[in-house]
Image (cartoon, rainbow, N blue to C red; front, top):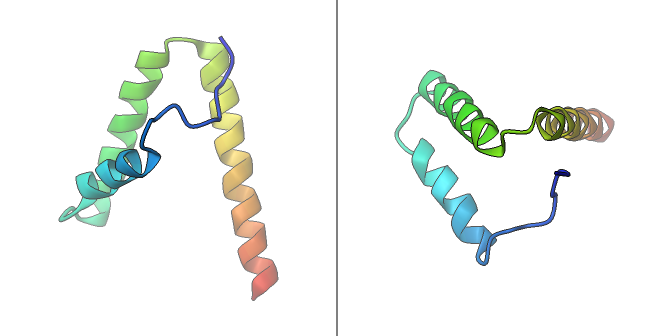
Length: 74
């Protein structure tokens, strides 16, 4: 299995909205806990360690790129 980075949702906005709504009313700590639990549930669903490693690497690159862009804008 390879990492799919294209949207697999018929309505991607609905997926985004569901995640945002799940965080509504939570403290920052609870929100972080929810994110961690969701990551573990979805990682288990994927069930492929190579895909998980690829997803982690991609997420880190995107996070670092966003951080660098913010620093350049300041």
